Each structure stands twice: as C-alpha cells, then as structure tokens.
Image (cartoon, rainbow, N blue to C red; front, side):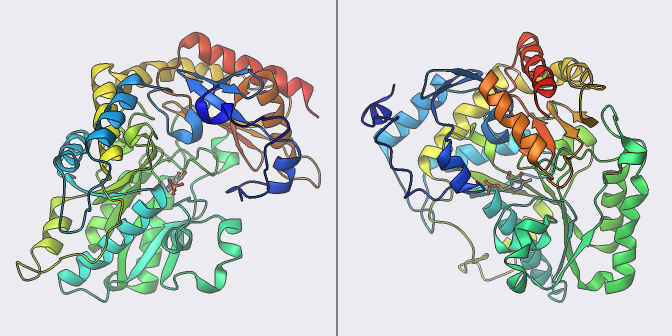
Length: 448
Ligand SMILES: Cc1ncc(COP(=O)(O)O)c(C=O)c1O
C-alpha cells in the first residue's frame, strides 16, 4: 500500500460521505464501493489486493500504461525545481518545449498550441477561438456553433450545448448556449451492424450540414465540432467518406471545422491523431487525456496558423489578443509530464504498435458475435464497443451488471447505456487482449 492509503483502514475507517463523485450513482456506489489503490503497466490493484486488467486505459487516457517511471521522475524533478509559474504575461521554458513536442505530432499546419487542463476546457477554448477568429476577420456575425447528436464534448456550458447527450443537457437546458444546432449522428444499426472498421453506409449524412447552411445561412455559422470517432456514446465510427465531405462543406462556406480528439488523440487509432488517420485536417483540434498519459490534468487546442494569425495579428502589438486562459495553463508539472510522455510514444513507437495491434483487437472483439445479448460490435484502432440488447424496462441495467461482473472477474471496462466500451493502453499485449475478451465472453454467459 502507498503512504496515503496506509493511513486509512480501508474496510472500516473510510468516510465516504464528503466526496461527491462525478458521473457516478453515488448512493449505489457507496453501498458497494470499487476501490483501486495502485496501478502498474496494464493492471490496477484493488484495496483488497485483486489484480484488474485495464481494458479502458483508465478513462481512455493512460495510453502508455500505468506507473511510467520516466513520467514520475520528470514530474518530480520539475516540482522540485519549480512547482508553479504564472502563465499570464509570464512563462517558463518547458511550456514552450511541451507545445513544440505536441505540435510535432499534430497534422501539418496545426501547430499553435493553447494549453488548458481538461477536455471540457479544451472544447470551450476551441469554441471561443472560433468566435474570436471570425470577429478578428470582420465576420463577427458568425456566432452559430454546430455540434452533433450523440457527441460528447465535455461538460462546460459550451461543450454540453454543442454536445448531443440528453441527460447531460436536460437539467441545464434553460441555460444552454442558444445559437447552436446539431448534425444527426452517424450510427445506424440496420445499415452498419457488426461493421469491421468504418461502415460503408452513411457519408451522405454530412450533407445535413448543407441543410443547416440553407436554413441559417453560412454567414451566421462559426464552426462545426465533431468527435472524429464518438467515444463516450459507444464508439460510433464515422462512415467512409463522411469526414472528408464535412471538411469540404466547411471549407466551401468558410466554416471552421473542429475535431474533438480528446479520446482519439495520441495513438488510439494507431496514428498520432484521428485527423492523420482519416487524412482530414480540421482548423482546430482539441486534445487532453493521453497528452501526458493522464498523469497530471492537461489539455490543449491545436490551432491552424491561419486561425492563430488572424487573432494574434489583429490588435495593437502591445494588446492581449485573446481574453482567455487558465491559472494552470501549461502548468510546469503537467508540461514536464507531457514531454516525458511524448518521449515514450516516440521512443517505444506506441502509435505504430497500436496500429499493428488493431488487427488482433478487431478479430478478438468481433469473436464475441453470437454470444448472449450481443446486438452489435464496432471497432477502429484500439477502440471498440459491444452493444447489448436492453433488458425489458431497464435500459442500461444489463451492461451495468456486465461491468460489475467483469470487475469481479478481473477486467475493467467502460459502460454507457447498454454498451460496453474498450480502449486498452497501447502497451497491451496480444495475450492480454485475449484475456480481456475471454473474461467478457464468460461474463455474458453469467448475466441475465
Ligand atoms: C471527446 C471528448 N471531449 C471532451 C471530453 C471532456 O474531457 P474532460 O472530462 O477532461 O473534461 C471528453 C471526455 O471523455 C471526450 O471524450
């Protein structure tokens, strides 16, 4: 046990009343908690000393595996040297170095990096940059933002407004951004069930953007934001040609295209970005999570030069160009973790490794076809989902039971609705992929 958990007698002393847990059924969880105490490589250890294989890289974020010594040492060294430096009108060298390293793996031209601390902040930053860009160019009437149904773009007011997940919006519906519209999502069970990789059907759904342009006029639209592959709503893989078409329509109408790559960034699809994987370059790209292996909160927006330059060159030379930023933007410890993480990705060739492993991952996940309750299976790179039929009158209950049973049997998966999602660290071995899906298979036979 580590120093902090040693001080608490976990079975009897732990007071669970104060911590209000995020995106959690608090009462249900606290009645039967699942507590992790340490992590190394592909495995978590629970407080009762069980080994749990990590089938989802923590929360789609620990791409280099847990407990990486290089990152720990870099953070320790940085904290010893300088724990914090203000980021407004001041800076420290490793902030610039971290930006350079991130820019190196971004698509060509997307090399102006604005740091923030979470995916939600990156999304709100990107939306604000889009509005500021049009204003700087004398098109301040372009204020409309277009998101997509079933999109998850974090939980800021901007993010939930462009996002397309009803429960995330419902309670706050009176205060969402008003100048927002949504594209339809791209998932269609009838057309695309059990697709391996990108479905063939559905590129035409991008043309819905033309419909919105006809409705609102392009001169009112600032940006379109989509996850290249929707992660949180169950790995919705874009149809072949869809993202290309979205790019063409945006370019035609002067609308900025934002890719929310909070999940897909840093190797999830076997390339540094989904943009590189699909060969489609957005104007703005959000990232977080695996940017520094989730060791310290950090996120960023990569802006293309034309967007950056339009804003930064627009005012007087001594004026602040963008009234936006966070106390912890480019925090020294997060920046140190970022550089160390980028070194690991490069030195261990983890993106290429993920690319090679995706073949094994695809065959292993699709081998679950025909198992009890399996209604659909989808995958791309090292992300995949198994959708289950819902229990009558209890949507989500079956996947929750599967999640619990998997955890009991030693694998951590994600679930959303009745979908099980998988995104192992990129260091996973072929044998561990088999181990994960063998447990899922036996679980499906044990739940009702
Ligand atoms: C695509 C996408 N955008 C934004 C976010 C929000 O990130 P965070 O939870 O760090 O705010 C997430 C989180 O999973 C995400 O998947």
